[in-house]
Amino acid sequence: MLSVSNSYASISIICVFNKLAVRKECLDQSIEALSSECDGVEYIPVDNVDASYLTAGAALNHGVSLAKNDLMVFVHQDVYLHSLLAVKKAAAQMQSEGFGVIGAIGRGADGRCIGRIRDRFFLLGEKVNRLTEVDSLDEVLFMAPKRQLLSEPIVESSDLAWHAYAVEYGLRMRRKGLRVGVADIPLTHNSLAANVERLDVAYQAVARSYPEFLPVRTTCGDITGRTAAAGRHAWMAAHLWRYRWLRASRTLQRNRAIADGMVGVLVDLRRHIDGIIERAPGRELYIVNCSAGSPFTAYNTKPVELSRGAGTVVFSAAPISEIPAVVANNPPNTWMLITGLLGQDISFLQSKIALTSSILGFHPSAGLWLLIGPSVADLPENWRSKKATPLGPRALVGASILR
Image (cartoon, rainbow, N blue to C red; front, side, top):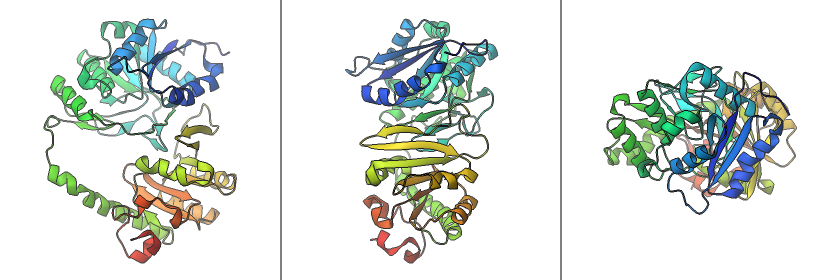
């Protein structure tokens, strides 16, 4: 076992879970894989399978009452940690630099996502080398001192039951003159669904409680003075997809020209990744995140295999220069998804590997991606809709994809 030096803090990891299998597959598996880094780490799972806790705050505060260490780290059940040393280092920095609460990812006042994590299948946010102040934190992982949490516990309001409780906590600490920040804590968020039920209610509660900080940038959108006005711009919302479709079409078509007219689709893979896994040979999908600049994680670079529904995903990250070798080493007759690409990356890959059975896709939320292996006939049915088909001559997209 590694000894904990002065640069690392002892931490208590608290996870409220309602699906034991998910917790074991993700968070438990990662902690077991990092057993050599577990000195000074206490793990406290809080069972909410029977919904005995009506809010995340109630469950997490109970975990705090059981903890023995001075720093509390709140983590979702579907998170795979790539380094406990990174978490302990961040906790020590928070203590020494006077932050009230820090996390793995948040949004700055300028709207940028700060801190880099893997969210489902793509890298999200900008990597940081030191604690960086933000407007708000995402709930996926955040931490605060136990002494502070005993006097200022996580909110247990029903309005913020399962959303925005880290956002609220950060604003409360800012009101007290403390800083809110993000550290370099690499993790994979293997979320199976985007739960937004009552998110609007949570944001309205935050807007009412902290008017002096508005607008507040969050990872799920902006909280403004108009947030409480439910249903505004309903007509515009029904038609905004056309504007987004037009802009996305132009982006995709520019890159399809680079890719010699490769079949292209406009799909938000965050909502469709499981449909691809279901169609992949053996229900196994290999995902490589193209990581420009600093690597996603310097702590543990081995591929990570996680279950998703009835399938399996194998995650890795590499710079574009190494991706042809990753593709070449992929098991035969498997599908591979490459994310985080730029137009010149497509040209580079075409010069190194055969991309005859490949689909090029784009969505503003996740950027440009390339799916290697399937033919057009293998694509999900909902990829044949008008919204998924980019602007341009039907022949360019492939007649078989259109109806």
